[in-house]
Amino acid sequence: MRCLVTGATGYIGGRLAPRLLVDGHTVRCLARKAGRLRDVPWSSRVEIAEGDLRKPETLPAALDGVDVAYYLVHSLGQAGFEAADREAATNFATAARAAGVRRIVYLGGPEPAEDRSVPSAHLRSRAEVGRILLDSGVPTAVLRAAVIIGSGSASFEMLRHLTERLPMMVTPRWVRNRIQPIAVRDVLRYLVGCAELPPEVNRAFDIGGPDVLTFQEMMQRYARVAGLPRRFIVPVRPLTPALSSLWVGLITPVPNAIARPLVESLVHEAVAREHDIARYVPDPPEGLTGFDRAVELALAKIRNAAVETRWSNASGPDAPAEPLPSDPKWSGGTTYTDVRERAVAAPPAVLWQVIEGVGGEHGWYSFPLAWSVRGWLDRLIGGVGLRRGRRDPHRLQVGEALDFWRVEEIVPGELLRLRAEMRLPGRAWLEMRVLPAENGHSRYHQRAVFLPHGLAGHAYWGSVVPFHAVVFGGMTRNIARGAEHLAGSSVSSRSALR
Image (cartoon, rainbow, N blue to C red; front, top):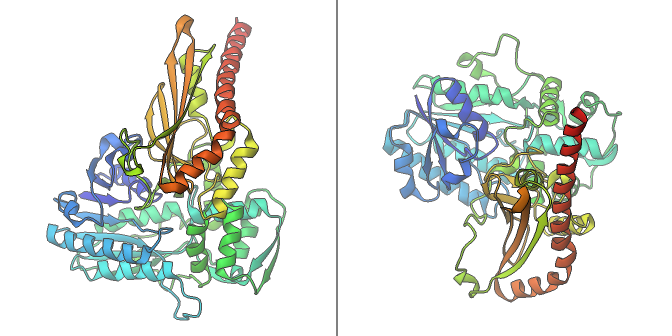
């Protein structure tokens, strides 16, 4: 069948598309910018349609000839996400019906609890989107999953970092609520299987793994699987979801804007009420993946740098998606730049290896305290901070997150351009280039660009200029030295082999 995958740049969509291909389907991916999928390993095997769910005029072409449409988008972490998701789902439902789509498959969250004393806007919105799609006139399957356990998922990263970084913790009382987590591999198996559902099926299904645990039990079992000592956990009443999300935002890579709806959803128990999906997509012979096994698989992926997608892959609809402009009229024509260049006694390929490895565990080759302080300040005002890290320690792809940057462009061996996603009164980019030089050596060219927004933007640039010699100057020197050291090590290794 011809399948349309929305949210293909996100955590689940980026894993579903290649599995649909393996299952023999033709796959079309919908993305606001086609370039965001340029570097994924399976991009040459899918059709890519540019479109935006909040722009209904872009949807008919994307849905033309589609048999099964996967709805895997949401605006979690964005301002006004309930209204945005309602509009997007309504547009999609209308366009799918008009295009003659035979089935919609939607991955949502658990059904909100009847107790509304602690409302979850996140769960409420997910449920509303499910109802809109079920009422679309197109047969729809809504899969309701609670916590998804897999390398790179936001829920797993929250669990992992809390458990690893806090051997002792005072926690909110919701850590004793029951949850039925599910391994990402089982989620994907259900999504693929739903393409074959009979046309009369138009309903929601609860999906979950074989274990029902409290979040406290999940942390203790994670610690055991990861080889950590038992954690000391004391639940207390005063920690509200708002306070809990601030705490999660400080300890884990998940920013407050995403942590809060996740925490609010954990306040409600999330246990599957039925397992009717097995009538249509039978459980595998070995059974569904248990919690401990799911954690083992996720940690193995992280250790082997084989994480396919991460929660940070997706950028929200209000993220600045425009490339570096050449004529920034909107900012009054002002462009601030910091340009530095340095000769490097190393081949271009070696210099590129160092450039492509920046960020994450490798750091930014310059005054770590300054970068850390900037990251902490960003998190304190609701930004993403530095803790997003990177998906792979050696290779980057267009569109993926890199600490508080996003990769906007890569020309292998020549250019890496990063777009800032920290909170700023303007827009910023950082470019790193490799230029060839004589004798097989190279030159490193670095350019920081800032387009100020209003008086605050101009004041911001003026306040940080005094630190550029330390931060950007040090970065230029240390990247050059890193390449020279790497080149020298390679020469020494080859000499020793002789």
